Image 1 (cartoon, rainbow, N blue to C red):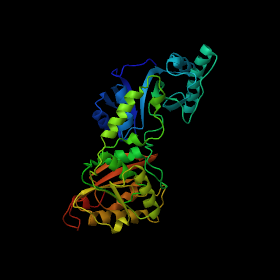
Image 2: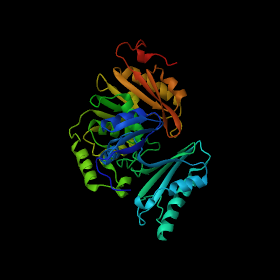
Image 3: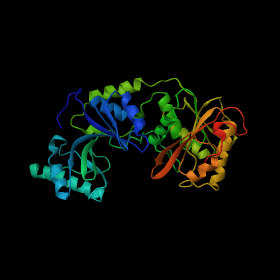
Image 4: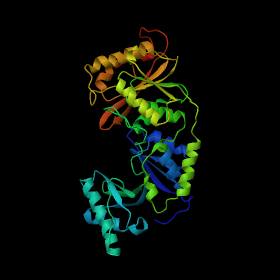
Length: 397
């Protein structure tokens, strides 16, 4: 890969979770990239090397930032092998660099992504062996160069993976509970809530504190990539500009707001979770911003007249509740009686139990938690009568 000028633009693809594409597009808009196009679990755009570094540091809802090398059609094994060999791999990596290939295959005559990855690896290795008599090694865990192959209906996009390890692994979360929420999903849910980063933010079932930390990072303008321990994928590239990356990193550090910008409060009924959340909060350097307490949500009251409350109660998938319908009924009762004036968001994968909340959702956003089909339900808890006259106090269909 020839050394590019800092100002040269090239195409990129940011991958994300289903339902968060528009949120990611807005994050990319803020980085002033060009030609933003929303796709399925991905947003394509154009930018320069600085913007690629910034996208990795700043995009809260991106999983990977890919830089396409080339697109081609592969009808069979021979096609794929020959097309991969059309790239001069010696320009992309050195013999002493390790590499790995992540393959994603859908609606294709090729059935197995592992086979596609293996064939691509063979084409690269054979090219080096023919030219030099030697071959680069594969390292699936910590490669110097990570490649991504996406095949849909036999159309292939072969890309550099500039992120390396998935961007959802921020690096602050050392302690987790049995069902931790993916950081990208948590950040996306907060963005979808429309929280203004100034009003009170509450997570009354805080678990390991992911919602709280992601909210605090937004309020304090902290780049999510700043906690990262492992190198980014682009740091192993031939055209990596360390000086430019250092500048992008220092600029991100300088943008952090030190003084708390919003009241961010968490509760959990389990002392082990509270302890785990506290350790993660401390690890993120946010103890001065986030307050977390041992408390039963059903006995709490709103600490202000208005704000945003987001919770991810058990679904009976990974955490099993004795009576899931009773739990959800109690959630509805507590929101109705104790949190009037708030916008409450319940993220759940148990759509049947959600009916027991007994409130009418003003918005239902489809999302996934892993493979679990979920909804983000919005309840506008108007002040006034407690006898069911408000919009947020009507039985759900």
